[in-house]
Amino acid sequence: MKNPIIVLIREDLRIHDHPALYAACQEGNVIPLYILDEESNIGEAKKWWLHRNIEAYQHSLQSINGRLWLDKGNVEKVLSKWVKNTNAKAVYWNRTYDPDIYQRDRSMAEDLSSQGIQVKTFEGTLLLPPWKIKKDDGTPYKVYSAYYRSLRKEEIPKPLPALKRMEVPHLQDDGMALNDLDLLPTIPWYHIMESIWDPGEEAAFKRMNSFLTKRLEDYSEGRDFPGKGLYSTLSPYLALGVISVRRIYHTLLDTENRPIEPFIKQLIWREFSYSVLLHYPESPTRPLNEKFSEFHWQSDEEGWEKWTKGKTGYPIVDAGMRELWATGFMHNRVRMIVASFLTKHLLIPWQRGAEWFLDTLIDADLANNSMGWQWVAGSGFDAAPYFRIFNPTLQSEKFDEEGIYIRMWVPELSQLPDRYIHKPSDAPEDVLKKAKLTLGADYPYPVVDHKAARKRALAHYEEIK
Ligand SMILES: Cc1cc2nc3c(=O)[nH]c(=O)nc-3n(C[C@H](O)[C@H](O)[C@H](O)COP(=O)(O)OP(=O)(O)OC[C@H]3O[C@@H](n4cnc5c(N)ncnc54)[C@H](O)[C@@H]3O)c2cc1C
Image 1: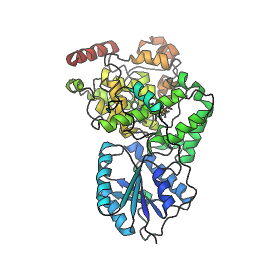
Image 2: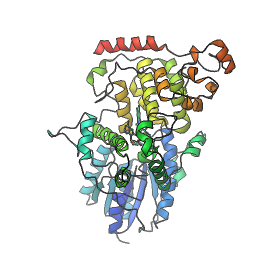
Image 3: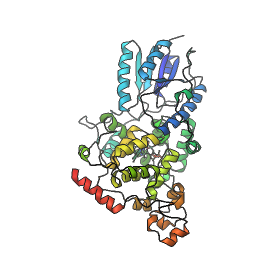
Image 4: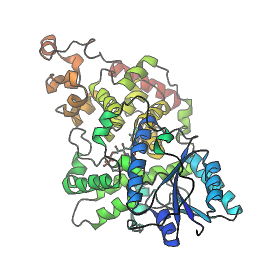
């Protein structure tokens, strides 16, 4: 047996446009190896999604004569065991940019190289490596629009074709079985997610194509309206690299006379998030704007409980939190509304909300999530100013005028007329009775009064201004 090349598979569960796998397959025998890092804390929802996508990936690889070996533990130690046992001559991987993993990978690369094992790393996560787009003075961008303009001028490498066939060695060690990774919870709470999200590359391509053929034209106007379903829902696939962002980008560029720019702008927000994460690795936990370190957050346990359970008494917030719990996903505008509610109406630190999201989103992505939370909380680069406090009722009236989204996720309000669906506590008794709704029993009163909460938030902001 010729010495094989190990390809470390991580958040790149695909056979198309997989630079590390593609390069290794040009050179001979390949061992695609997924090591579940026992030190990483993947959220519970994403674990379910990971399980399903590893399963789908195993089938994809089998269909091209390949296979996926699985293992778990401390990645450096487990990899070193596989290198030794298989006499591997090289290890290739696509880079990922979670700061801890990125640092670990760098030292792992040095270590392997010092033992004579060739290491090659590739860009498989982003359009361009996150250090590529910098200001003329060499410093990273802090303003999105300038970053966008600069990236848009760059030539983005074309995606690689899907692998057609690969050669894998016969190994004595079969690795672990997927179930031994223990990614699925013992209580199967994920049945709604199962019914919504199909794993695997074929499903990802289907979603992309359906979005491009049916919704791209209306995306710019409609993306902010959660009841219209005009967004792509590609983030769960991007989060595990089931589809590559270069594939999406070039498919857009190849479509003629279509309004592609609004969607490209969103893909570039993702690039910007990764650039911020790489250059400011503390950003998942520390405010980028230092003055927010002094902010007096509260520990409102009752508010927290109501927020996480979707029982705040603000229907749009509750709809979002229930959508998240049931589906592992939440519409972008609603993410902004619930995040604003937590940080400004309840004064609960954004880091706690960010952690909740990472645990419950199947598209949990450290870069996008940290950027999203810091943006809403006002402490990020190019963020919404803190004093601009969303009024959840007005947001709801504007973006879910007929209450389509609210009725879907807060069914106890479904009989209310549109006029009161955004704020049931304003409805007169006879309207409530007709809608078969008893406030305080079927649906909670608002956990805070908007005006009072706004005043309190601004007073806290005054202290650090
Ligand atoms: C508080 C908060 C937390 C968030 N946490 C995450 C997260 O953990 N994971 C995640 O992928 N996104 C996160 N986002 C960004 C955004 O909400 C999602 O990417 C988007 O809702 C995914 O749905 P979609 O694929 O239908 O998006 P589309 O509107 O179809 O956009 C296409 C793609 O562009 C990228 N994109 C869109 N909006 C943003 C954005 N604001 N920032 C960065 N990239 C974007 C995503 O990759 C998305 O899949 C967060 C936003 C906020 C406000």
